[in-house]
Structures are given as structure tokens and as C-alpha cells.
Length: 297
Image (cartoon, rainbow, N blue to C red; front, side, top):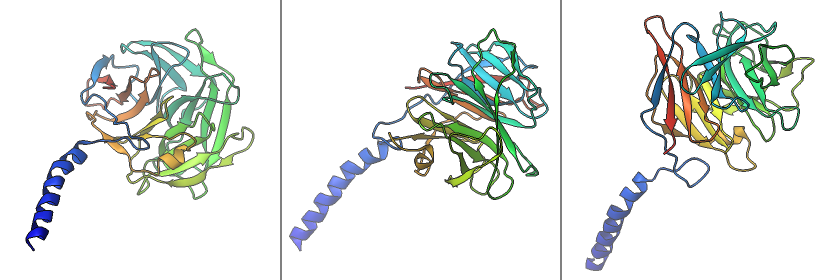
């Protein structure tokens, strides 16, 4: 009995030492390396009046030091070049493209090898009244461009009726497109498999759902990292090699520290992988919003 009690004391002492170590260890999903970004961003005010309804953002790969921003319904069919320092450089029009409710923008691979493409997602549907949605795909324009005249229209529908969505991800390995819904009880994930049809509408395939809802933006990095944003939180995954985005999102994410914005609807990784940006819409009661950069630590 005495021996048994001594063994129990030893076990309790070992656990006393070991459990705090486990509690302090924070591992990124899909790997053993901890993920760490600044808890307080570097913020740069955006001059009000030009980008007041930002709904998507992505880092430009052909215009160094600039980000692409799109705005949602009621705005022209333009994409906007915004510098890292928060200065608006210019607007580029997507000729004849209707901004019914543009809700996200992504940069990634496409049909032609070695060419970087932009994907502009007209996928918002607050009242779930539309039967089809469009993603515009075109080679990323240079800053000297005034108008994008040639683009693919990737029309699609869902297999189970209408959905309101505000986030897309492009898998650079497979070139599949993932759409993540906002208002479902749990945000659903759908996939448009490459090569997407440019002549007739595709039907997106249901992949699964997240453990939360309210998704307003998503981003992926060149190193297989994924961010998904709601108004109040940011979630992080690390995709393993030879794993699809859908498979990665089936795992439990790490929740990052996030400084809540007035109506933050946009997130993207910086191309050099040193952090990520967020950007908010400007509600009428707010005088200005900021471009926020969370540096990797």
C-alpha cells in the first residue's frame, strides 16, 4: 500500500511538471511548427471616399508593393491598386463586368503555366435569390493598364440551391476553386474542379463544412498556409504536401489573435510570407478605416 502511494506521488509530480509544458505549446495544424503573428497590427489609415466598401484583398504579384482591392454591390466593376503604405494608386475597370455583389478576390495559377491570374468572385447573395454566380478570371494586369477587356466567366450553381458566400480559395497545385458560404448554420465548402467550364455553368461539388459560420474572406499563401476570416475572428491552417484545401479545412484550426475592425471583410497573405493584411468596410458612423498588417514573429 505504501509502495502504491509512493508510485502515485511520483506520477502526480511528473504530471505537475509536464502538463504546463503541453499547455504552452501551440502547434499549427498540419505540422509541428508553432504559428505566431503579431497580436497588434501596424495600421495605416486609408483616405475615405474611394475604398469605403472593401470586400476582398490580395497581394499583387506583378506590381511590387501593391495590393488589389475589390468592393461589393453597388460599386462599379473596378479593381483598385492600393500601396502597402495605404495610398490609392488607380482603378482598373473590368469591361462590361457587372458588380452584382463582388465579395472576394484571389491571386493564383490558371490555364496558362507561368501566368498569374486574378479571380474576382461575384458570389454574394444576402437574400439567397440567385440561381447562378460568376467568378471572373484573367491574367493579373500591370499598373499601366486602364481596362481589362478579355476575361473568363466561370459561371456556377450549387447542387442544393442558393447560398450567400463571401470567400474563395484557389489551390495553386490543382487549380481547383473553393467557395465558402457565410450564412449557413455552419459555413459550407464547395469546389469547382479544374478545368472550370467557360461555356456553360458548372455545378460546384459539396466538400464539407467548417465548425463555425459567418465567413467573410479567405486567403492562401505560397507556403500552403490558409486563413479564414469572420467579422470577429481569424482561423489558420497549414496544408500538408499532396493534400487538398478541402482536406486541410477538415482539421481543427488555430485561432489567431485579431484586433476587431468596424466591418472587416478582407484578408490576404503578403507575398514574401512575412505576415498578412486585413481591411474593413467603412460603416457610415466611422470616419475612416485602416490597412492592417500582422507581422509574422
